[in-house]
Structures are given as C-alpha cells and as structure tokens.
Image (cartoon, rainbow, N blue to C red; front, side):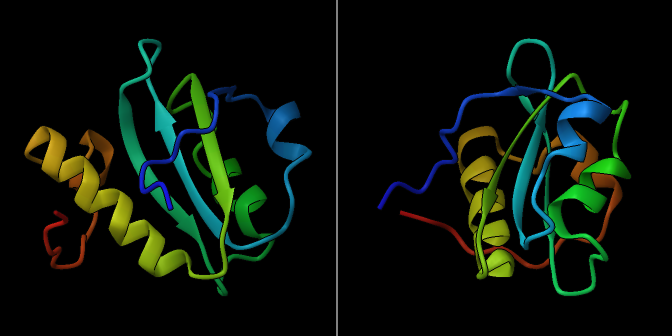
Length: 106
C-alpha cells in the first residue's frame, strides 16, 4: 500500500468542488508549485462530506486532491506524519489548528 497521496492535483474551483461526492475522506491543498499547504479531512460531522469541507476553504489555495476513505482520522494523521517526516513540521495552514500528537512513520 502506498502511503503518500499521489493523485493528480485538480484546480481548486467552486465548479470542481460542487461535483465532489458527499463522502468521508481526506484532502490536501497545495500552492502553484504543488507544495502541500494544508491537510484536512471530512468526517461524520461534515454535512456534505468532502464537498462541504472543501467549500469552506475555497480561495485558500489554487489546487487540491482528495481520497475517499472511511478511515479518515487514521489516514489524516498518516498524511500529517508523512509531511512532518519530510519537512519537519505540519503544513503551513495546519499550524493554525489543533493537531493531534503525531507518531513517526518508518
């Protein structure tokens, strides 16, 4: 199983987000160079799943990608751990939120 989210980046627009499924999962936002600036999730409390969580963040980054996943909390932590392992810190926009205590991978 691949740990990194390797799906292609999509344009982060209202039209694209409106077509997303109302399912649980994780997502990443990136700058123009493809550097991850935020890692988030859509869980059981998200009214319309990935669609509503991404709608809240429209305009905060030019690109996004997502993964439908019922184990969204575990996957979210996993992606955060991978980012910390590679860059020494959580993504820039995650630094403004409460982030759980993270372990180390590998």
